[in-house]
Length: 99
Image (cartoon, rainbow, N blue to C red; front, side):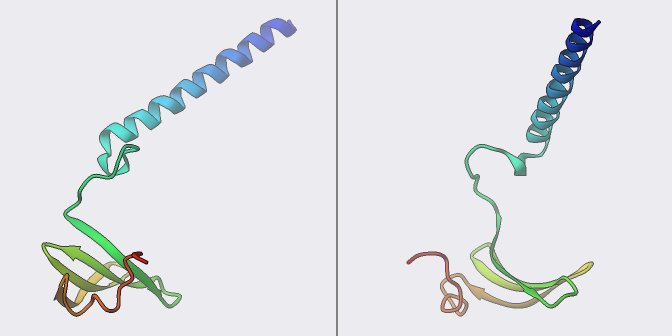
């Protein structure tokens, strides 16, 4: 009885582990933004984001089509606050990590 119980537990463990691996594989296959491989080029890139208060609002700088766009993000809403070329007005405020 003990050996049967242990075999049953091992079989169930293998089944659950196989289902977990299969689920992760399907997620990776059907959601390309979550790929484990190298970074792919994106059309939209979030350069920086800063939380604004306890309500969940944020300020974010987004790169798109050669522009840096300052957006205000709140629950259910996103507003464009300002735009500038990538080499323009925002450059002096943004730390890209280049030291």
